[in-house]
Image (cartoon, rainbow, N blue to C red; front, side, top):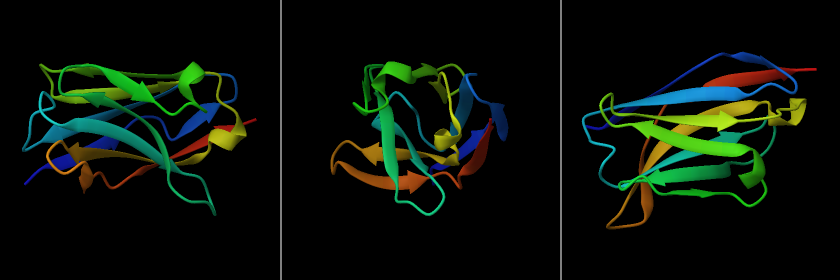
Length: 118
């Protein structure tokens, strides 16, 4: 059973960098695709980006200029950094796996609330 757990500050000041870590157990991040997704209050899910089994990355065009996803394979963790945040970046942030063979999300973290204060 694969488990994902998000961690990081719940409150970030505007203009600062939001940094979240996803710790994975029961599966290696050197396989499949590892994603960050968010859901602002009252809105739908928004895909932020992924880091692949090889370490390559892809980002949402709307967030690409402010986003960086990296990984630490020794800790089986991957990290999201979102710079120059504004209150519009307030959301529940999720990490999730996409299975390579199906291209479908199959495991999700429980999500973590991040609030950006102005």
